[in-house]
Image (cartoon, rainbow, N blue to C red; front, top):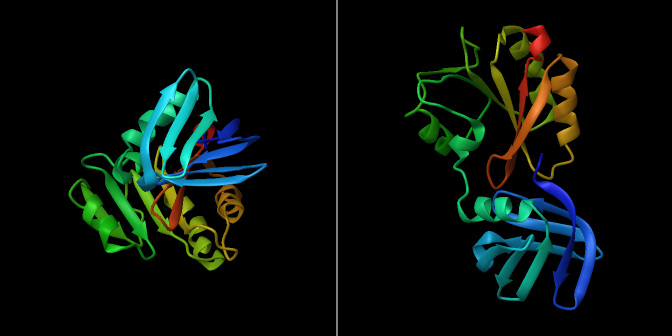
Length: 202
C-alpha cells in the first residue's frame, strides 16, 4: 500500500505508461513492457526533477514519479529493517502463531518484553500469524476474540501462491471485523498484512 503507482517509464527508446511497484528488494513495472530491477543490480539511483533514475548494467531506466521520486529514492538507498517495518518496539508484548523462520525470532527476542506461542496474552501489542494456506487462516477468528485496544495482528503469507492470496488474507481479517491497515515485504518469499480493531469498536 502506498508503494504502487501509475507512471510513465523510459528505458532507452521505449516509453510506456503503466503501474510501478516498489518492493523490498526490487522495483517492478507493468505496462507496454515489463521491467524488473533488483536493487542488487543497480549501479546508481537518484531523484532528479521528479524522475527516479536507475543506472543498471542494461542502461538507464527512468520512472516519472513526480513528488514521490525523492521519497522512493530514500527508501531504496536507506531501507528500513524488518523490525522497523513491522513496528516492534523495545519492551513489546508479542504473541506468535504458526511456524516462523529462526531469523525472525533472532530479530524479535532482543527487543520483546515478552514472547508467547499460540496464545494472545493480556495487553499484547503485536500478534504474528504464519499462514501458508487457507487452513492457516482459521486461527484469525480465535485470535480476534483476544485482541483488545490497539493490538495489531500481522498475517504473514507466501508470495505468488494460488493456495493463499492477498484477497484471501484480507477477507479472513475483515470477516472477523478487523481492518487492514498496512502491508510490507516480510521476506523474499513472504508478505505481511497488518490488521487492527477499528477505533469505534475498541
